[in-house]
Length: 236
Image 1: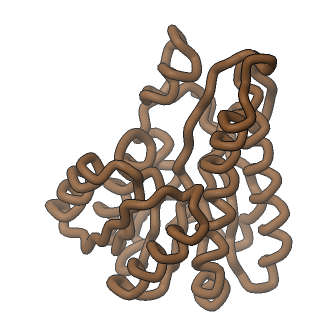
Image 2: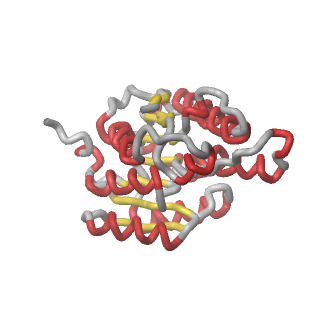
């Protein structure tokens, strides 16, 4: 059987939100496939623990403690990762947050923060490594959500952000199609993460972070280059 991660060996993959949950699972899958990893997150201690696990798996790892909602910080982080690892072949925009609140009780700052992390962050990260991706026929994987496919009560900001991320995926796939960049999204359902517990208290998880990581590995290493602008529903 062909190794689904074989195409990732030696390539540079940058992953945001890599300190826990889906991002950590993707990092470990990519490490096992031989990728050179640039791991980004806000929490230094948790990020260091994931990086250590990936290094023990044999991966070369660089880290950046960064808030993806800060455009200038993203530019600095990506420049530092490129200096250490080389040009970027794969970008996984996984960083996210959630707010469960009635719309009438949602303040401006709360609304903006959810959109800034889930949507602006993907824009800033993709823009920061755009030249590499276009020159190297790279791949972008945006971790969206079932909330980017449908509406959910009390999650207006999160739904708006994830619908926006799906739209960004589709628009940029067309914009960069001629460059050979494959840009796709994954729309997970209920994954066993802290974010599920925060956004949907009491909801039963239908899958593990590793289930989503396996899908990300396929998109990064095995999916045909012509597969772009797709949104893969992984609902469990």
